[in-house]
Length: 198
Length: 348
Image (tube, rainbow over all chains, first blue to last red; front, side, top):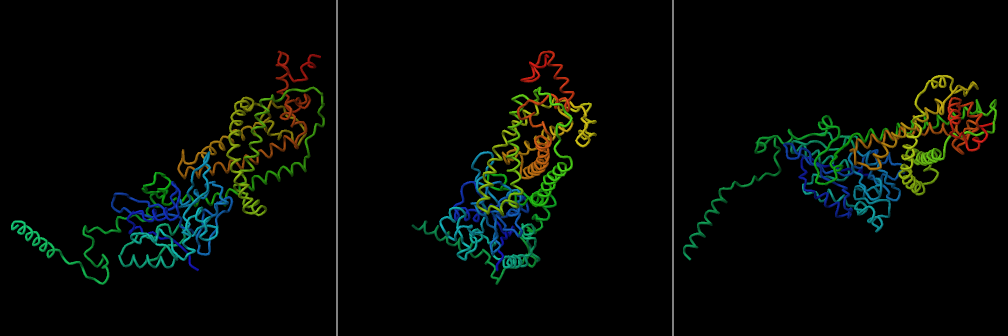
């Protein structure tokens, strides 16, 4: 069975935000919620690098561990999803997530956040695959159609890779060897407890 | 026509010269690695100046960059403190809560089995009443008390609900209950904070440490011996309760307000610390209040009346709060009424 992961090659990312736009458009993500975002380090200085960050779908996901209503589940592809029916909007998953993936619509009084929303690896949610209900709550389910996440598909430089962990690690390894440099797979140690040996 | 034609020919010639002068693109089968080629035009090594993840973890507490999104939380690339938060919330806090709350229950049960209910044995019931708490004090106490019970139960649900209630209710019912528990927790926080402020203002004067308090504590209030060390309006045990509620309540209120308006005062690390403070203070104060409820209801005969009706038997009061009764009687002689039904009788 495939173990789905994301890998953003920081040396190739040109901060074009195609991944951000693709995700926002495909899932009709509400205003104010940023499932995927591009973060630039050392902006304007030598050694500037950009990284595209969304949910990493961690092994032993901390968001799932701290949820007081246990609304998270992991699919057979190791994609971490949650149920908006059960979510109470307490905000604990955001405190625990190392990557800041959970987002809240921020409606209501006194910090009641609404239902948490995050990157679904284009795998929808607990509602039936490719149904209206699933699209309204979670967005498009591409994985059920045998497709990979749209952010990686739309990446203009193929810096953002998505797919089985072994395969994308091999792609990245080959790249680094061929070009002679690479600042490593950002977030892999934190999310998957492994690095890519080159 | 001839002049235009001359210009056209000149232009074409120049274009041809430029095209010939341009070097032909390298026709290789695949890209040449920089190490084998002459390197980047500037001579710089593209990797040498790039930051690596390990380097940033060493230099910064959390990795942040620049984003085009107005929400500053989106600029966080990685915050390792989330790992500590998870370990605390799932590993440490349930143990603290379990030990402190269950431990208090076990201790109270053991005390009750050993000592039983502290009755009025040896105390003469005079039938004369003295006012212990007036209506406003009682109202404040009960408003705060009821709020605290709701807050404690809904607060414990955040930590223990999924462990204890979820298996009984199932996911949908438990999630609905938790949703309403969250609303109740946010709502009852306000009367609790108001009541807390009022209680501190009303009773801080009578809860300052005094001479007899050390003796009272050393004798454990006479709970085991049957003797009654003298006490003022509040004995040392009650003063401990007051300060636990005042300081613990302020810690809960402060951290709670931070969480009621998230990310307005603090960033994510501050919010995590607010969670730590709120969780620990809440568990500890819940244990203390369980003991307070015990002694005020089951634990001691005659105690409930103080907060229930506001009037206690004079004999009971003389036994347990002798110094307070003396000062109240001195005030009565100067004209302040002692109790609702007692005023007419005191003159005889």
